[in-house]
Length: 162
Image (cartoon, rainbow, N blue to C red; front, top):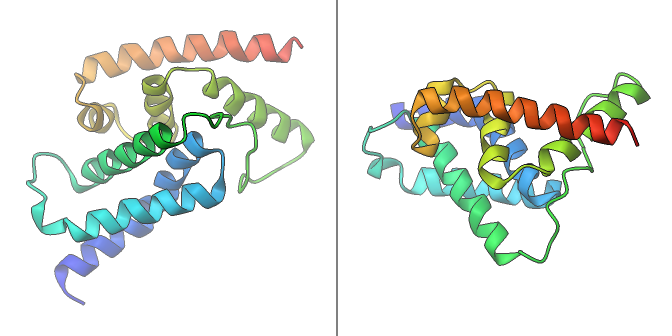
């Protein structure tokens, strides 16, 4: 296996599930999330030689995924972006499932950019990586994540009170 194939395989194995989670947050369908994930990595592979190195490869792939998700949203604007139906989440008990369902339902109430930021944050990308993907200053990411957490707490508490 050559160096390019090894690097691509490593990135695919390391990030495909995170990219799929990101896509699922915008499609509410595991099938569509799978398709968008495949499209993302297919596009990355096709354009591997065009990568300019202005960011890390993973940042570049996240940008591709975000563009694929935004294109999907434009094509399917009539579809609701409800993240309520969670799949492939390990369930410890019904309380855990209820909590996760409410969390993702709360995330769904955020605007597009905040959903992107919190999804990448939950996927454990660094502030620097999130900033690079979105073209925002790293300090702004820290502030936005703090504000998003406050918004999510407020939204979550409203749902919990129902």
